[in-house]
Amino acid sequence: MILNIVGNILVTVGTVFLFLGALGIFRMPDVYSRLQAGTKATTLGALSTVIGVGFLQPEWIWKTLLIAIFIAISNPISSHALARGSYKTGLKPYMKKEGLDSYAEVEKEEVK
Image (tube, rainbow, N blue to C red):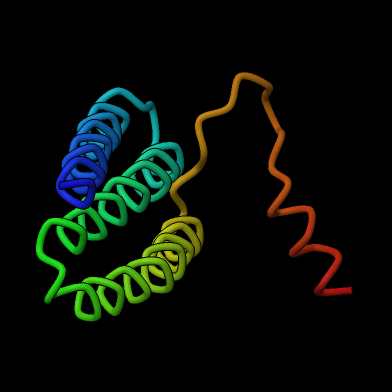
């Protein structure tokens, strides 16, 4: 009984975060902000949903924990790779201050 309540709460929280992540992807101005919104919110949403399913189906708990670990490792790494590739191909971040590019400053210091 308590596992069902906890599982339903986790699945609901997960779907809310997945929705907010999708909304963030739709509303943000550039690739980097979209990656931020997509990675943070959808990672938490997917983890909550998968672990909630583990509570709802206790015989699947080890499988859901393995999936959750994979999501927790792969989402940040893939987001970083996409952001770095986007920057390397010339996509500039949306900035209110002109000329503010912290990554370019770090690259200049590495070249020296």
